[in-house]
Length: 228
Length: 367
Image 1: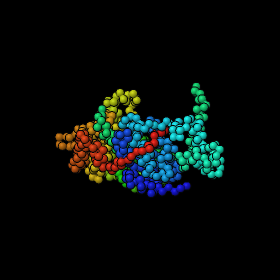
Image 2: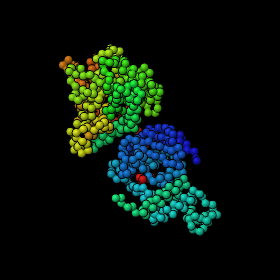
Image 3: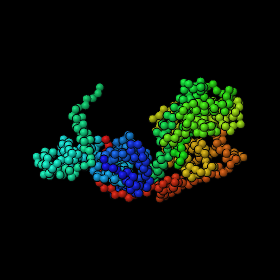
Image 4: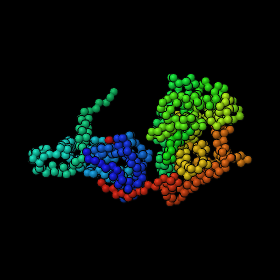
């Protein structure tokens, strides 16, 4: 596992956001304090500050950061994209991975992911709608994301695609092996594979998304009987 | 109703109130600890068991108006340990009562180590928890008041049976069997506070509350109400601006006057503004220029009695109140910088707003 320099990353973060502190917990590092930002969304100036808390797992980026709004401003509700355990639902894990890869710098997490969400929430508070829309809840959102990004027609093709992606990225194929995408060519000659690898995330574990989609398909297939 | 500008003030005040309030889990932590202590004091082998001891919180912790301690200080949880039967002023002295409680605490390995100072403080035994929770429990031994003096004092109806006697090392009769003990009634005050708050809220917000709560009984020990937040902000403002002054306004005066001046407002801005404007109307000034902030439960007690012997305390109180009313004047000016003004008043670190360009933003998504 690659060593993650939390001290150095935090130092760089604190330079830009001085009202933050780093603490060392048992299972994770904790960053807490205030974040202030000024930005523009859809031509509207959005300026705000939030009290936040971040739990950074010791094996980050293998496990993702959990973000909390600690100032009591965002009440728990799916509409606010805040879970009942207090964590903010900042975005699809695969999207977060795409933006933060390959170095997963803390400053990038704060500016691109956390402030991205908080600014959208400030906009939502003021104008009563999310400026860039919302991803559908749960696995449906995950499927929609892949369909859109890789131009796939339906859930089944998303599942097939992800399985290929997973096996190619996680267990890199040797150039002289038959390509796993099923085209018949040698891996080194398959252009489709190159494309997939170019847009996939090496550090992302697609297995969890594959499992979620499989479970989702199963529950959709078996009709749920009303309970009497 | 809040205007657009006042909404910003309201939002910021709530933000500050949220920052300074003690988090719910800390309340729960403290409850667990004092309940465990109560079980030890009334435990099977305890010599105190026959006196039926009961532990309950008093002060800001019970009133839901506690605020985070200043840097380097700890949370203070005041508790009463009341012996409900078998002990009275004819069979025990203050010193003996204090010793009884102290001995039982010392008989417990862990509590014994947490006791600090070992010989007890003036009115209580203090347990200091060294872990990350950073609080200490002050336990005041007490017996029920014997009502012999009540004809002299006008007591609030219903509060009499909660009145207690507590111990005080500096009391002239500390070591003697006598009817002369230090009197108090924290439970009576707590009940007054909650019933006042509820009554005023019902009057003002009848339609809002009647739907959700029973009219007959008041909600027990709520936290996070508008009045509680207002009192927290008042106390915090006092701490920030007069914290090191030994003549600073005391919390019981602030709490009592704020509760009397509160008119059931449902938003923090109006509540605070009106409380600050009207608090002083509830200070009585007698003919010979004696200032009284009457204990609403016991009319004989004057919370402002020290203002007589030390007029500076009175001056500081009005200075503090004046600075609050000035603050509201500033906030209500046209083009006021709300954020800056409040951050200054509460000496909060101004959070710089970094300019950020959002590109490739992630859509919010929930499980």
